[in-house]
Image 1: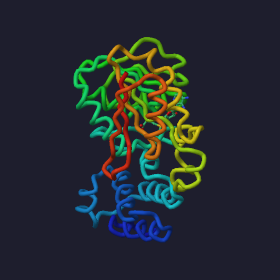
Image 2: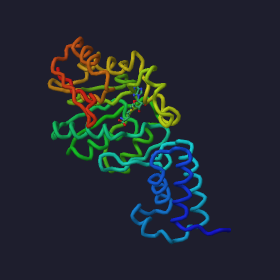
Image 3: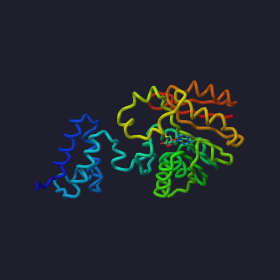
Length: 278
Ligand SMILES: C[S@@+](CC[C@H](N)C(=O)[O-])C[C@H]1O[C@@H](n2cnc3c(N)ncnc32)[C@H](O)[C@@H]1O
C-alpha cells in the first residue's frame, strides 16, 4: 500500500474539493488534515514530508468526503471558535457567526457590571458563555426549545469553565424573574428568504434555528410583547436582527411601549443589531 506524505494528501484533498467547487479548498483541506493529525496549520506546513499513518488517512478521507458534499467545515471538525473561545458544534446547533461577536462585544462594552441576563435561543451557548467569560459575577439564564442544543450548550459551558443556568423553554414559557438584559439572536429567516440560502446552510444547519413565521418577525414580536414582564426597571433588550427587519421591529417595539430604540450596522453596513429600552 502506498505511504502518503502530508504534502501529497494536502494536494489530493485540495484537488478533490476544487473539483466540487468548494470555497477555500486548500484552507479547508489543511484544517481537516491538521485537525486529524493534532497539529496547527503552521506545524502541518513545517512537516510536509512526514508520512501519514493508515488510520489517519482513513479519517482524513472520510472528512474530506463530507466536505465534498458541502457539509460545513465546523460540523466536520466538531468545533468552532467564537469570541476567542472554542465551542463544540454539531447538527443540532447553529454555527455561531462572526456578526454575533459584534453583539457580544457591544453588550460587554455597554454593560460591564450587569448582574442578571436572560438569553432566548441559546443554541451552542456561544453568546451566553462569551458573556459569562467576560463579565465578572454575572448570573445568566439561557433558554432554548431544543433539548439537543441545550446538551451542546451545557458541554460548552463546562469546556469554557463558566457557570450558566440552561433551561428548556419556548421563549418565556418556563422563565421566571426579572433581568437587566434580555438578549436574543432568534430565528429570523422568512420562508421566502429560506429558498435563497446556500445549500450548505439549508441542508445542514437546523431549520428550527433559522426559520421564523410572519416574514421573519415572529420571535421579535413574541419577545417584545412580553419583555416588560421580565425586565428590571432600567432593563434593555439586545437583538441580532435580519438586515431588512429593523423598521418592522422598531414599529413592534413602539407598539409595546418601548421608546429608546437604537439600530446598529455590521461591518458590511447592514442593519444587524438593535438595542431597545423602555
Ligand atoms: C439563530 S439560532 C441562535 C443560536 C445562538 N444564540 C447563536 O447566536 O449562535 C436561534 C436559536 O433559537 C432556538 N429556538 C427556536 N425556537 C425557539 C423557541 N420557540 N423558544 C426558544 N428557543 C427557540 C433554536 O433552537 C436556536 O438554537
